[in-house]
Image 1 (tube, rainbow, N blue to C red):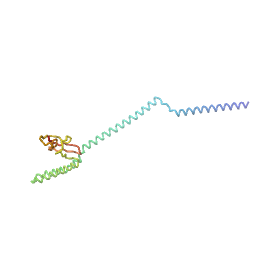
Image 2: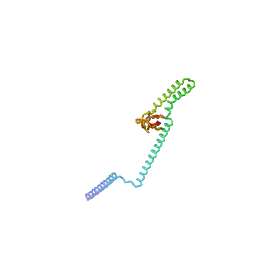
Image 3: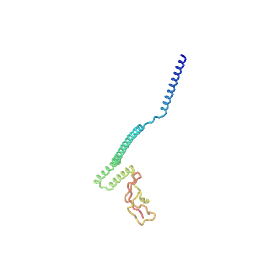
Image 4: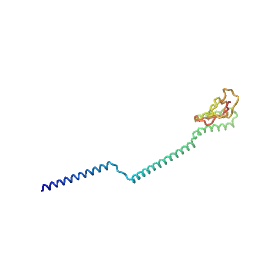
Length: 193
């Protein structure tokens, strides 16, 4: 009987161990399934995440909009400054020519030789035109060229010209100028008909 009791105790122990092993295996299987399957978020959690993402994107958008507005204001201020003071370099280089004209004016009162005065003024004008050429200004050469509305403005039409002169500029009434190859003043011309 004691053998039977020992056997039944052993059987019970074995059953308990088997039951524990089975329960442990089931728990491990559940844990593995839980780790493998992503946990489903509730609707409230999803909504909270979406609202947080919207708030973050809204802040980023506001930051970028403010940054762009500051950039735009800075560029406008720089452009205004360029427009306001852009001519300073040219004006500074014109000042010596103005000084020359003032000296010429003072000397005109004292001079009796008109030819010398005329020569002095011609030198000043030549100096002035060289300066303007350095800045990109170019006088148009129009006489004898075909009439072109991109460069010329016809102020007179001269009839009775030879056939080879028709539709060509025969006289320049007012000079035209280009600044860096862009027309800043059209030449006023007489055109042969």
